[in-house]
Amino acid sequence: MRLIDPHAHLQADAFASDAAEVAAAARLAGVERLLLPGWDLDSSRAGVALARELGADASAGIHPHVAGEADEDAWAAIVELARQPAVVAVGETGLDYDRGFSPREAQLLNLRRHLQLGRRLAKPVILHCRSKPGERDAQDDLLRELIAAGAGSADWATNDGRPPALLHSFSGPVDYAERALELGLAISFSGLAFRRGEESSADVARLVPDGLLLIETDSPYLSPPGASRRRNEPQWVRITALWLSEQREAAPDRLGELLVANYERTFGRR
Image (cartoon, rainbow, N blue to C red):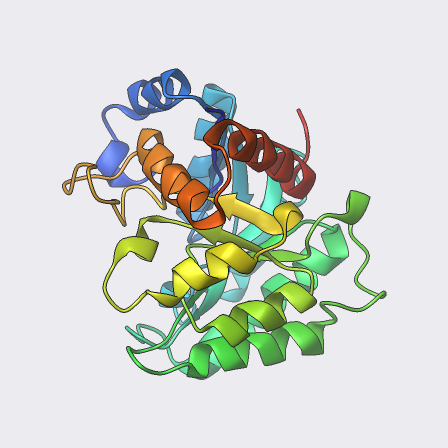
């Protein structure tokens, strides 16, 4: 089965001693395309450098957890990184009202900057979104910010019809996913879909149009059942892929072809 992993933090400390070996194991498992997202300036720079070594892709951005810490110099450096051809996406950014490590206003300002940058560069924006259990305020705020930024409008032109943004490691109610899809966003599923409280992910997995569907690991986090609980790795994206094939009643090989095509449509071919 052909596989992808558009969200693997191989520049994280968890992979400090063996990132190349982990990437090689992923290739052997069928993972053809890898994307290393940044979550702050240092990790964005490290992700770009490591992606070059591994023949992978990278993104540059500031996560909502550290939105309150990023100064203007850091943001200017992210903008310069995002302009590089090797950087295929903007982010990881978004909103996290669950842990709330940064004030909401700082998160919203950070998100707006990323959306404007992604629109200006015609590169998709990788979006993290979490609310506290049983709540949806982060999802509702994210949708409002996307609409205000022009997502879903003819004004937000993207290359080759690629999505303006993607909801990484999907979490939220079905109607949130439906509205995001109406705006043209892609949706990616991770090991989070297996956790208690995320049952809506199965319903969403069945309704995402073929062309807007992705999977990921969010390594080293969110290990799916059967993978190491100590450290998730890109090779374990196969578990989520097989779950997705069951939800959509799709043959694994056909789904794999679709996922690779969607990765290339979203982030570009090499």
